[in-house]
Image (cartoon, rainbow over all chains, first blue to last red; front, side):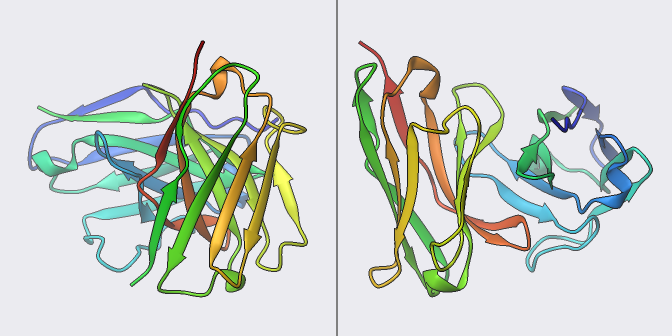
Length: 105
Length: 117
């Protein structure tokens, strides 16, 4: 079955840029979606179809996808971005990555 | 505005059954695929099942196949998940989510299912 691999944790200082990767075999040919989940809350879609943003999501959130790696980039990180982030694709069924905990130092 | 509200969670013994409901408002359920997604305590997201807008197409994760049944009542704008033969590993928060081209743009707040003796 298809596997999405995310780093367990990423740390970044406020104001810097965070990059969270999602690895998968030839993931570049798939549409990748990203979710943010804060403690005790439901996930929120922040990027869909590799690089599109739902309404209400700041432009600081962007995505890219090529080869075997998709990346969620969060620019000018602030404390409010601290959360778990999950990538997701469709491969005969819905597949989620294991999640990455973003810590703002 | 779009709203999804789950209900029906609770404590159940291993081998027991539970039916979850998801009440949709702000849109017509029949226009969208819907999914159930769960999250075990301290763990990541796991897709459970989806159903098409008409209810004619369904799919399940291997972990629940044969035990869980997804259904919908479009007239009442309700989505269901019938869970039978529950196991400890089914303990999780269960979310319903609205599908748009294989991504989930709207989620409910979740309902906790605890399977324990």
